[in-house]
Length: 293
Image (cartoon, rainbow, N blue to C red):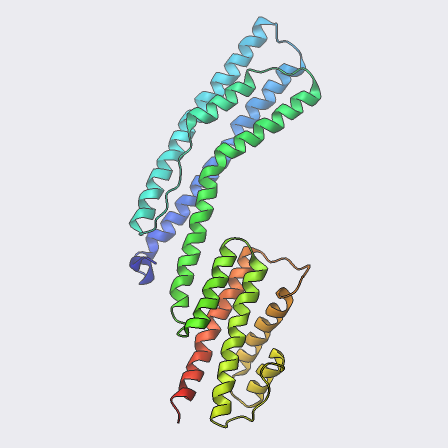
């Protein structure tokens, strides 16, 4: 992650860029208003079957020209905002560029639809649907890229948090979970992150056994809920961490098997972050035991 963000020296710029990105997405969405209005008028011209009427042909021409005159400056303003946002992103040391909208592509598509007449109702509906699909592809570029940047920032934030985990195998498990989460497999990511918790709990028990602080038991056959219960019962973890570990265990078990419960990206991130917070605390306990002879 950028050192500027890591040490909090340029957090206001990140917040400002976030606000700017929200504005860009809102402005792109606003483009659909005048387009829908122009299409509605055009559908009326089609419905009344006045294609051979000179006045109607003028209405169609004026409608097309009016829409282009509206869209061109709006798209230019959006692109200016994108240019500014890209400069801010570069200044924050992120390797990401938001693509600009191509006004010529948008106006060409709208012109093609607004100068074509379909008298049959079903054909008209199909044409409108196809037009909106093509329009969506043209307009989704900036929004899609903005979402990718937001995900990049979130992953970079994780990168710093994960550095607090000392154990290489624990850290690798969490990093794997973060990667899987970034490509949309939220339940699997939570399950994999949960496995890292059980791994470090098992290592903790091995040290407790070595120092004869606890009597040995079979780590392979003992359920995770019983393990954390033994830790709390012997005052080796606080009640707070017992509940945290219990929640992690429930998620790990639920998403380790086929489940009807669906996780959102936000829910998955919250669960992984909880695990990232818990692992270093268990590591501290483990480290204290390892220094004992």
